[in-house]
Image (tube, rainbow, N blue to C red; front, top):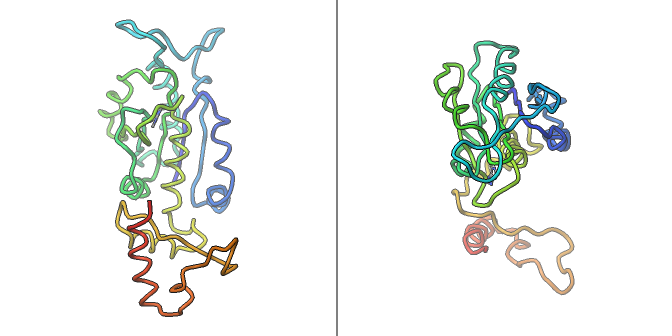
Length: 225
Ligand code: 6GU
C-alpha cells in the first residue's frame, strides 16, 4: 500500500517512522511519502491561501495549488493504473469508523489532503470526483475542531495500517477485536502481581476455567464505562 500526505507541516508526520508503522515501512508493507504543499506555491511569499469569497473570518486554501500537488503525486505514481483514494480531512466529513478503516485497508494508494485555516476550496474535491483515477472521501475523526487535518490523518493511518497483513506482532489481536461487536469495548485486563496496592485480580481469571473466563469477559466488556 502506498500512503501519501499533502501538508504545509511535513514535520507533523514524523511519528509515522516509529513503532509498528515505522516497521511496516522498513519491511516494505507500506510506502509513505509526505509532500509539502508550499513547494507548489509561487511568488516571494509562497502563499497557499486567500480570503474567502462571500466574506467572513479566516483564510481558504487555494484550489490551483492543491491540484498541482495532487496531480504531481498522481503523475509520479509508480503504477499509473492504480486508483487513488483521495481523503480530504475536514470536521464536516463523515465520522471515521473501524468499518471505514477496514474498507480503506483494501486501497492501493491513500492520499491524505491535510488542510489548515478554514479549509480547502470546495472545488478541489468536486474536481477529483470527476476524475476516473480518483475516489474522493471526506472524513472527520470526531466532533471537535482541530487546527488542521494532520493529526486526523495520522489517526486514520494508524487505524488502517494495523489491519494490513504482517503489521501486528500478534495477529490474534485482530481476531479478538472482530469478535467484539462495534461499540462493545474490550474487557479489563490484568497481569502480575496478583495483589497490587490492596487491589486483587478477579478470582475467575486465576481459576483456569476457560468457559467461566470467557463468560466473565463477555459481561465485563459490556459493563465497562
Ligand atoms: Cl479531519 N480536521 C479538523 N480540522 N478538525 C477535526 C477533524 C478534521 N476531525 C475532527 N476534528
